[in-house]
Length: 49
Image (cartoon, rainbow, N blue to C red; front, top):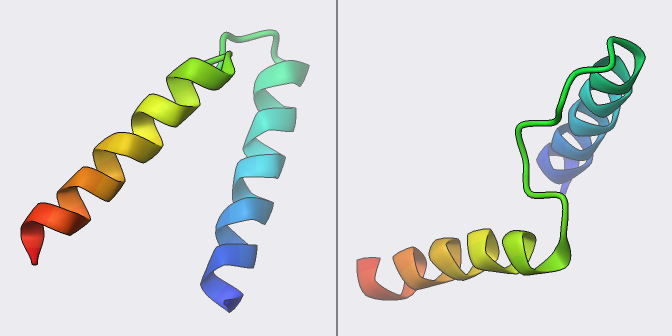
């Protein structure tokens, strides 16, 4: 659980840095893109086992 919180915190801070520097974020900007990434991860986990 600590790792998840640390990952969220680092992502939050980096998101702020990208916004401050006015750079495009290297992540999908809509829900469909995020769900696609989650789907890839879940598919990988299922077929790995």
